[in-house]
Image (cartoon, rainbow, N blue to C red; front, side):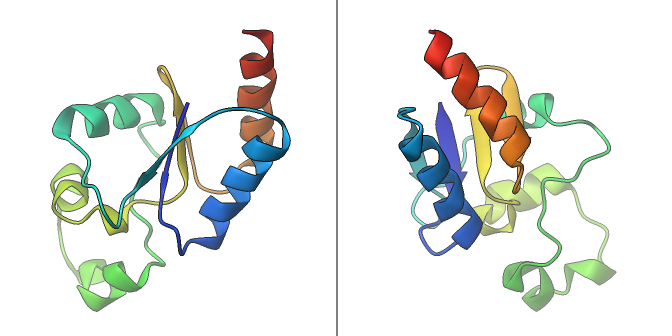
Length: 115
């Protein structure tokens, strides 16, 4: 399992604590230090419903860049600036959940315990 986020993000910290408290091992990817590859972003996008955006429209980066008033390609923007990603993104195989979703995290944890 992978958790994508930043060390400063409180919801990412919440996700890490959630899985750590349940004894589920994970690999943390700090988006402030590492960019996503195109292949990894494609894997994440395949696991998210098409209508759901991966860009955090409330992030300071989104607002600073004035993206609310722009037409943009979501994938290109995330590849250029991974801090736009709605975090945390939790991925296990083809299953992906973005944002604060403890119900889905619980499903991930239950499945991890079965393995």
